[in-house]
Structures are given as structure tokens and as C-alpha cells.
Amino acid sequence: MTLDVEFKATYQLAQNLLVALQHKNISAYQTLILGENKLISPQMKRSLRTLKKYLPEIRLQKFR
Image 1: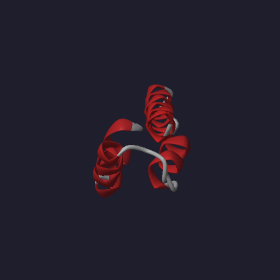
Image 2: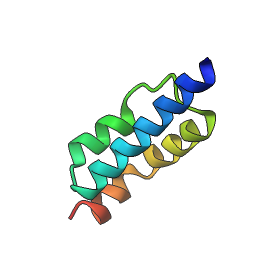
Image 3: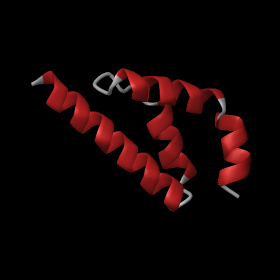
Image 4: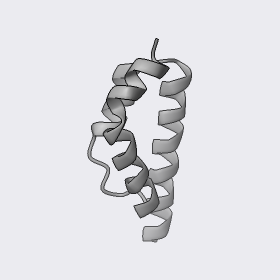
């Protein structure tokens, strides 16, 4: 059961990040990256740590 919850939370976060990037919505992107995501997979948590680390550079390059 927890695998289903983890998969759903991870998938939903990934899709929301994709939409935020496609629409160049920096506030939605930051909210997703900086928000608390307890139910996501360990791999996605690692990805979020990386995205947080490079958030200033991502802001400058992607959201022009």
C-alpha cells in the first residue's frame, strides 16, 4: 500500500514540476522544490536536493 502512495506522490510532483517549467511559472516551481514532500521516493528526494542547490542558477537560465 505504501508503494502506491509513494508512487502517486512522486508522479504527481514530477508532473507538477513539468507543468511549472513548461509555463515558466517560477513561483509554482519554487513552491514545489522548496515545499515539504514526505511521501515521495528517495530518488525524487535526492533530485529535489539537487534542484534546491542549483535554484539560483536555474532561475537565471530557465525563467527568462
